[in-house]
Length: 188
Image (tube, rainbow, N blue to C red; front, side, top):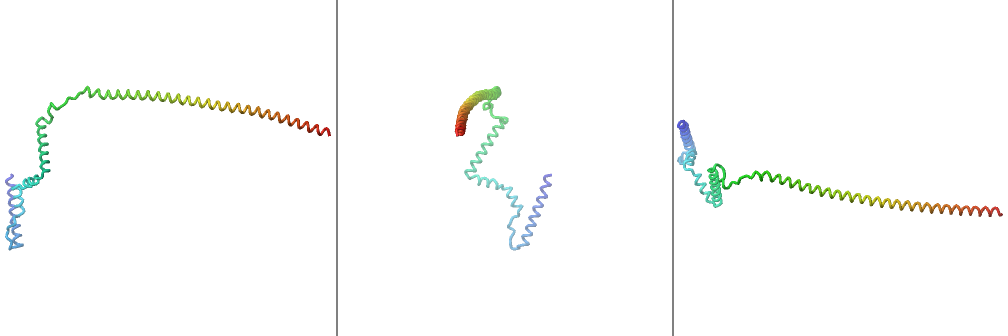
C-alpha cells in the first residue's frame, strides 16, 4: 500500500519538474536549465538534514550550550526517577507522623482557647473596674450635686429669713412713719 502511494508522488514530482522546465525554456530560451526545481531542493533538504548543522552552529553560543546541558541533566534526573517507579529513594522519604499531625492542631486550639479565656478574664476585670469607677464617679457627682443643692437651699432659706426680717423692719418703719404722720396731722 505504501508503494502505491509513493509512486504517484514521484510521477507528480516528475510532471511538475517537466512543467517547470517547459515554462523556464519557454520564458527564456537562452538560459540553461541550471535552476533545480523546488521539489528537488526540498528532497535534498530532507536527505542532507541541514537542521543538525544549523542547530550545531547555534549551539556554539555558550549560553545555549549551558541551557542544553541543564536540559540534559534534567532529562537524566527524570530518567532516574522513572527507573525508581516515579518515586524518590526510600532513604530520602520521611514517614508521616500521624500522631503529631493530629495533636498539633488540637494543641493549637487548646492554646487559643486558653489565651482567649485569659483575655476574657482580663476584660471582665477591666469592665468591673470601669463599672466601679463609673459608680464611684456617679456617687461623687451625686454627693457634690446634693451638697450644692443643700448649700443653695440653706442660702435661699437664709435669704428668705433676711428678706422676711427686712420686710418686718420695713413694715415697722412704715407703721412708725404712718403713726408719726397721723400724730402730726392730729396735732395740728
